[in-house]
Every structure is written in C-alpha cells, then in structure tokens.
Length: 210
Ligand code: AMP
Image 1: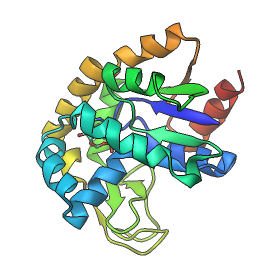
Image 2: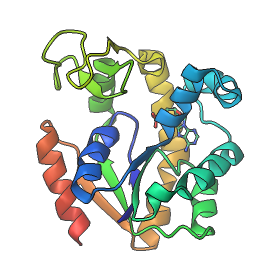
Image 3: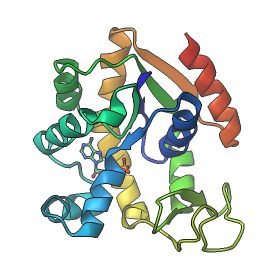
C-alpha cells in the first residue's frame, strides 16, 4: 500500500498514520517529523526551515521534493509507505505524479476548523520519541510524561494559537486544492475524524477497502 494522508494540521493524521503503519506493516514518512529532527540536530536544512515552521509557513517546494525523492528511494519504502505531510502543494503533488513513485490511494480525514483549533491547543508531544498526546482526549498515564518512552511532554512551538490559525489558513489556501486533484484521478477516500481515535481508525480502514 502506497498511501498519502491528506488532512488539515491537527486532524489526527499522525495518530492514524501510526495505526495504519502497524496494520499494513509499512513505514510512515512524516515530513514534519523529519524537519523537526533536523532543527533539533542543528543541520543546515534545520537552520533554513526553523523560521518558516515557527511562523506556520511552508518550506519551499524544491527543498521538499528533493528531500522526499531521497527518502522514498530508501530500502524500507520498497513494500509501501504512508506519507504524512507530503505533498502539501499542487507543485509537490505534480512532481510526485511525474516521478517513478506510484501512489495507490489518498486518504482525507475531514475535521471542521473549530474542532482542530480545540484539539491543537491541548496537544502535547514527547520531546524524545514525538508520540502525541492530548490534555483531554489522549491523556498520558502520568502527567507530562510519555507513556511510550518516559520522555518529557511539551507543547510544540507551532501549536501556539496564532501559529495554528496561520497553519490552517495555509492548509486551506495551498493544500486543500489537492483534494480535487486526487478526486479527479479517482484516488481520494474520505473518512471523518471522530471523538474516539479507534472510531476514526475503523472508518479509515473501511474507506480504504474501496
Ligand atoms: P506537520 O508536522 O506535518 O504539521 O509539519 C510541520 C511544518 O513543517 C509545517 O507547518 C510546514 O512548515 C513544514 N512542512 C511539513 N511538510 C511540508 C511540505 N510537504 N511542504 C512544505 N512544508 C512542510
């Protein structure tokens, strides 16, 4: 299965990607996680992208296309993959479409903006393994501590309210048009983000059967 997860920031893409990775036994390639790791490691790429990410803006297409061409040619992607966060613009989608990498399906997780703002304002991320939790919807067993690796849970810089609004505007402007791009190709499947993560996963698996 070669799958693109296409949804607004905060719609639960990352969590569903985790579930689908296990279900299909294929890796999730999260561009946001790759970029944040580069920032943490202080790489040249990290220095270039930090300001953009903190402002809720997109990283330039040529940088992302090169990064993904390299990543998707790695051995672990041979049996399939889940793309979380790429493509995010029509230019990126067209570059992928013209490459040798063939995509089977594109999954949209539909969540209204008001719910996204509520969700992101309570989101916590593990500073070590990047697993996400939520102050209300996915509480860790111990406050401030990751259930998986024991790392400290923090609020991501780009989950601050002003940046969230900017990220949503960027999504509507630049990424939403991709829904039509893939619907026209007959590749788009849509599930609705629900209160319970497991309910969303059930619907996701069902719509992917078609
Ligand atoms: P995410 O964790 O997927 O929400 O990504 C966090 C941030 O990384 C985004 O707000 C963008 O600034 C940047 N980013 C991630 N993927 C892409 C992409 N495909 N194109 C441009 N910027 C990206």
